[in-house]
Image 1 (cartoon, rainbow, N blue to C red):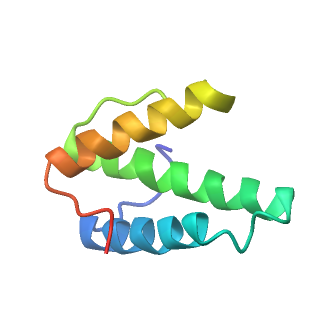
Image 2: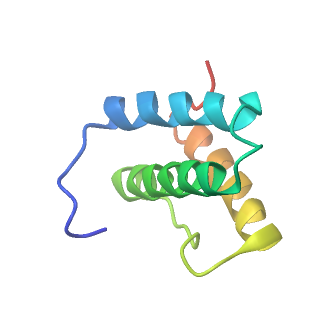
Length: 87
């Protein structure tokens, strides 16, 4: 994560909304590899947004239901910090 270039928070918000729409649409659910790649991209953007807004997160070491619960917690914290994650 540290090696990634800085991304404007507006771009992160746009990316998160786009990825969230794709994630919730169900179109990629038929392909496990596509869904895994989508969630990986979504989580990477969540982590960058957390870093920008000073929100603590523990997405990286978790898997399965634990990661999904952390994802929900992080989304709630980011929204409380003013980041609009839904259209």
